[in-house]
Image (cartoon, rainbow over all chains, first blue to last red):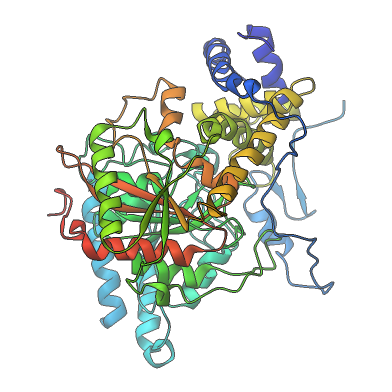
Length: 99
Length: 472
């Protein structure tokens, strides 16, 4: 575990997170992520061998919904909030993906 | 146009418009919508006569979706987002006769401890305008404290209902995880988030909880547990109840005046017949570290949906990848980016076991501490702590130090990690006239016990007669 982050490491995390960061932000987060991770390092002192992880405090058992058709958003409503909708074709338009 | 509902609604709207320039508690005041709804209730007065919230004006935190009413999560990302559906809690409140008068300011995507992370500016504390109202439901707490509405909804991921309630001198209840549907709540950390009431009086919180609680087929984590008659639990009789006090946890880091008010409140509960019992929560000191790993991991995943495609902000770019990255860079504020970065890192290959898995294991230990306190021999009905270790701090004082900011949640996050209900009730003031909150954490689905204890305390305390200087 790195105690401090380099700009390149922060930049790699930002790429995973789909965030474009400025040079100032890279420096800021390099420092702050290091600080936060140093603070949470106290957890490593605890012996948790054999302790099961808790992912959620959900109701016991799996829950199924009756398999019945229900009303849902119609296409026009679903597209109405989109920044670049193509209502005629029923699409969300995005920048070109392939070549 | 007049009538009982319209008059009450107009009064709330006038008050909201009068205080908002100084408090910034509302992102949206739903003037026309609220009055139209109130007029409908007055016209159909017979039909609504027995509705539990007939004509009650209510404010909703701006991360809870309202059909046709802008819902921003206080983010640039959703600054002009108008949801095409209602959250289940909103549907239930309106079916009970409540009238939504506005959407309250909060920390962006409910991330923060002071309401300073809002894209629309900080909320100011009605008790001292230079101070924070707490966060993240700061607008809801300030609106209730300033007398705009008797009750508001907040959401609580690590203390976001209770901590601002304490700092604004009002009552705030985070229900048991699963008690209230999260459908339509803009997700922050899905295993921790719960919606709950913020009110001036314990009884009002009980009435609203009864309305919004219960199974919802749209939220698979909502519980089928029967919903009790919460207001009926307010008997004033707390003899035979046992309140656990984790003294070792309170030894350091608690402001002296907060500590004094807290222990005085415990004495008051004892005088009414409750027994005070020492309990130990040995892992509670690890709750903040655990919380900031679990919550940021979940947040980084939940906030992946803001990609500029289906709704919200888009910053145009020539490629899809660049559009995502520029949209998110422009739409999210500094704290949200910081948490997305941290969460992305702790979930990334090579670090998952050391951070996220470890945090989930410590989460189990924190949960077991509470189970031990609720079981024999301590067998307590509730665990008492100050809600916040400090009273409201000055705006700007902690913004540059995320770690210091996170410590404001030291006593609240463990209830979220353990999925337990917890209430904050006003328990006095510092010499600078800043409110202090008493927090009680209970057994799963035993909100009735917390409400009974808080109400019993409220009956003996005179804090309700105090009003913030901005509205006196």
